[in-house]
Length: 324
Image 1 (cartoon, rainbow, N blue to C red):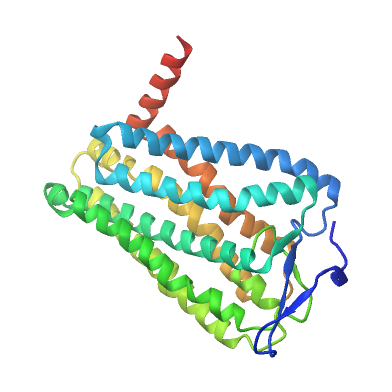
Image 2 (image 1 turned 180 degrees about the vertical axis):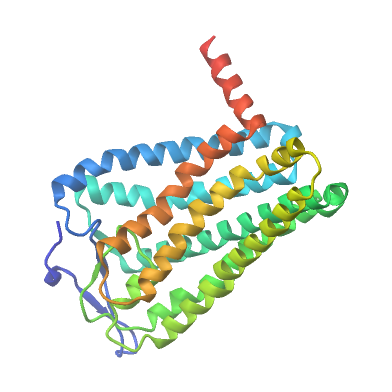
């Protein structure tokens, strides 16, 4: 499946000191031949269809049902929107790679995809933190929930998540363009990630390494700490409830969010750990990256559709009306 490196032209930049490839070559899953890649394209297309249908359904239901215009559901609509965009910038290109063996991705398009993947991941992390805060206020301070999380506050949180994702990750585009790429031009994933593009450079990448570590710790790292702290306080409040039934009912409202956090954070932590260990990109790196990007958009709508009574009943009503 991989093409000879001589087929990749390079473009000298205006200052004649940097060399950028016209395009990179995506590998897909290392060690697998074209035939296996071809058959893997079908479950990938099914996952994309499922992610698109599931997330779009959640967004439309929350938009149409005015009684769902509450903080928990508005944050869920934000999460589904992020997942919808994230799956749309990764899965179609992967499908073309697996089905037709189209490995080339233009240099600037690769950088744009890289920026969107990282920025959207940061937005998803921020939305998950906002959802944890919503559950904390609803369970620990129920009488103040309506006054704390107003519609205006929810909108500001969404705008802050969008702005933070853009501000923190936009510089990646420029610090990657300051590098020369005179080694291999093969990206050992099915999509473009900062750490993989950086490894292709033959110039000093210390700025990239330091800034990459800084943003992963200050964005996803800080969010994970606050999410964990929120759930410690929630668990403490739930355990203090006198009625066991009330405690279970209160904690049950957090199950869907906990699943979403685990599906997002566990592959992210695993991917960060294996990349920080260094060495060449292995099959483990690729599997962790694919899990991190492909699983949440598919799993989140299934979990929320099954566990959230209002959305579950609305979906069943849509199918029952469609069957008549």
